[in-house]
Length: 305
Image 1 (tube, one colour):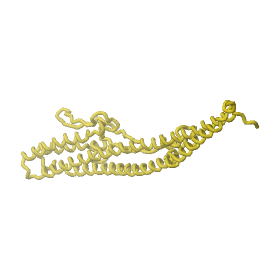
Image 2 (cartoon, rainbow, N blue to C red):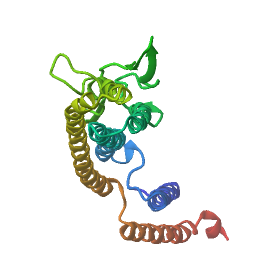
Image 3 (cartoon, rainbow, N blue to C red):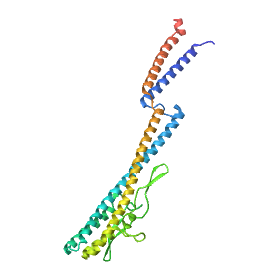
Image 4 (cartoon, rainbow, N blue to C red):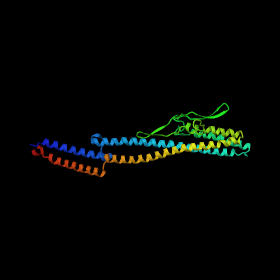
């Protein structure tokens, strides 16, 4: 085959452009740190990387959900811890008031403290977390408990519901993070079917103290024991859920490390290898330019000259 000068020029330009593309690809990999940047670089690898990124994004969201759920559970447990302390103080006052030798003035002083404990317990029952009330069921935007007067009778009403708040913490796995206030505070004492609230129990204690009725005061002690046990059982449930989420977060953290490592192997460059590849492409490019200068120099003009 006859080789023309035009064919030589075309081959030289083709080789120089190819070498420039190799250098450009290596330079892009070094500057981005990624082996692939678009699907055409390696469709199979890009598809797997996208799949890993989707999985990591899901796990990040589950991690956030679990952190929020743990915050809710821990805040609820902390509030019930304070409620337990309030009831324990009320029980102590009941023990004092049940003493038949307690003078009436002291009984009135105990009643005044019980009145303050009622306000304290209402405030605790209206504890919020991140602007949302913990014990209102699914009604989280308004305070669920309110101390009111009905005629001459004082009461604490519950304005929430018995709905549950479910967080998705893994694919197809949800966990209920709330305990509704009706269950926690309004159905705490007494036999099934006729339970009364911890607030009614405190009002009974207060009325007995005001009435200087030592016997009636003593009758509330067993109810306080039951109410305190009721709160302790709920706190144990909340603690168990928080611990479960803590373990799930640890497991998720390990899984995320594995996914990240695998994805890194797929898309990240070996910097030393890429630098060597770049330097080799650069040398070839320089050689191509030098060869072009030698091959294309003897033209018809040079012959005539």
